[in-house]
Image 1 (cartoon, rainbow, N blue to C red):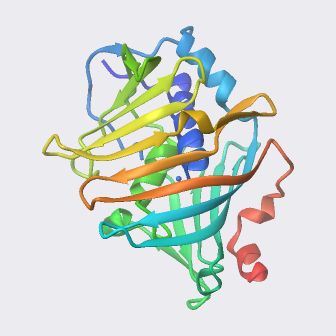
Image 2 (image 1 turned 135 degrees about the vertical axis):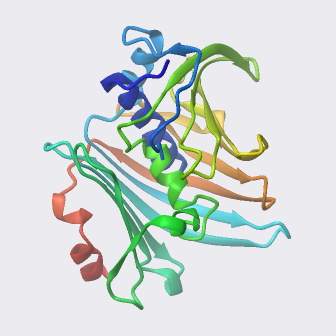
Image 3 (image 1 turned 90 degrees about the horizontal axis):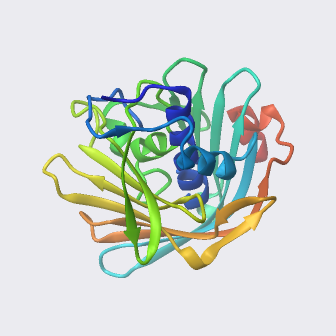
Length: 276
């Protein structure tokens, strides 16, 4: 049995907002999965209600990418997320430093009841380029996130199965566990399993498994970094470990604003071009 419900999608958005915005940024059409579907009246739903912002997040991040040799590259970027009154959701990632990368941007647009649209903008090119097909497996702004990861974690696709598995003990803390199975014909992953801390009500770990069953990536929240901002739990340090490449990306939050006013025009490349 699989779940295709407003709460199922809301739960995925909670994982996505906390992961893609709190951690840094695809539920494709799903196969049928077993186990227990998410209950609309469950404790997990209450966690989702507590963790989700009402409308917007603005977050400045210091990002460190470390490759297999130990060489690191640092950047500063701002992430904007907004849920629009017409049902659209948009996420904008914009690099500010170093100077030679300033202006690099990625925009995810999810129209209501339609598939997401992804664009990348580089100042040299001077116009946005749509990301689709095989390009979905490319790195997003040089991190260990791919475009597929970003869209997946945002939970933008409506045709998604979500199942709640048996609760787990994770490093001595109770965790709700949910699992999804993306379409094996279009996704790099066979399944994604997320552990949601029962006390903090945010994803504490997400595991991405390849089609051979091996663990390809792990996204981890540093528990001690979690702070409450405007009544919402926010992780101030998260790390994506790429086990296939032996690399990792650290996302440190410099500043965050929840449910602050973000004008609609911010989520356009006309605005991005003007800013640079």
